[in-house]
Length: 74
Image (cartoon, rainbow, N blue to C red; front, side):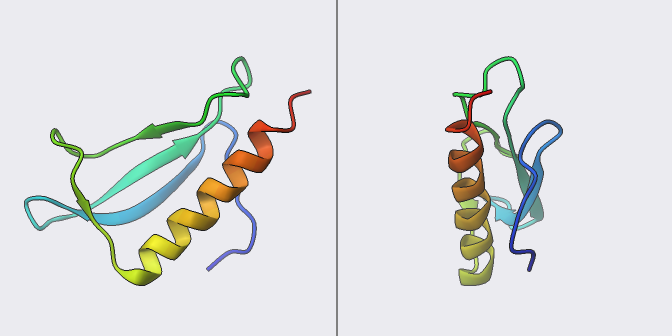
């Protein structure tokens, strides 16, 4: 698992499972035009995802990188 993530566009894809049981992913990214907004594109209609502990840890790390990047407005 990487220790740093580049969350600026196009972002980082984080794998999970969706409500139908299929493997899916969401995308975490920050636009250069709105660096104070963290965007999370979810894969499902009902926004219900299923995470293993390892997947949740990676999501936490990616979101932490997004918070750090979004706080670094240039």
